[in-house]
Amino acid sequence: MTTRVEHLVTSGQFSLDGGTWDVDNNVWIVGDDHEAIVIDAAHDADAIAEAVGDRRLTAIVCTHAHNDHIDAAPALAERTGATIWLHHDDLPLWKQTHPDREPDAWLVDGQTIEAGGADLRVLHTPGHAPGAVCLYDPGLATVFTGDTLFQGGPGATGRSFSHFPTIIDSIRDRLLALPPETKVLTGHGDPTTIGAEAPHLQEWITRGH
Image (tube, rainbow, N blue to C red; front, side, top):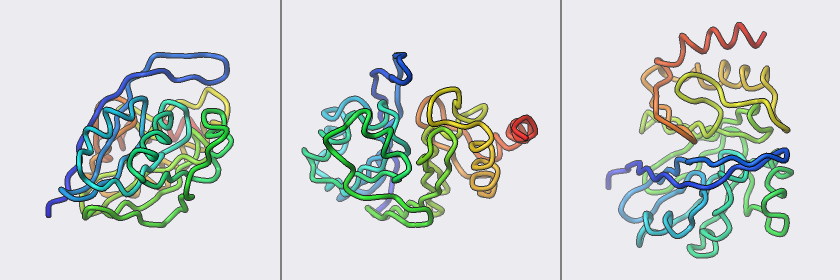
């Protein structure tokens, strides 16, 4: 059974530090015809469940706990029975959105989450948020970067719980080490590749240190 990556865009709001912004989020569904994983259950549990269809949803993996990436996770989990995964360092952010419902399991650097032929290796990449992770599947030659790396540079670090030198270290040490042909599927916006971003990232690294 062929493993595939499906893409859904959902719209809602991101709120932090007293501000609120309208945002479009990328939701990624990885798996085969029988089971799947959702990466970042953003905004619309019904739309995500419809895209999953009759497949067994085994996991909802949160790249980080900003509200726009996790707001639909509990509703989707309740509907499907999927396990919500988050890195423990992002629990304070999670509780801002879901104070009465903790994640079901904790992501740990180096572990692999499997479903539908996918093998998603967890890379802890703090900076945008303390518990931010990227998910790398060598077989798919793809890394899901959440808000750690976008087309054109690193994720934002101007708000609470974020730190610019830390995200630069994460990108340099964890992401630039991946093969240059690796596809980068982001939390917002268009995809890119590690090779396409590497020249620009060297400038950011110089700026960060």
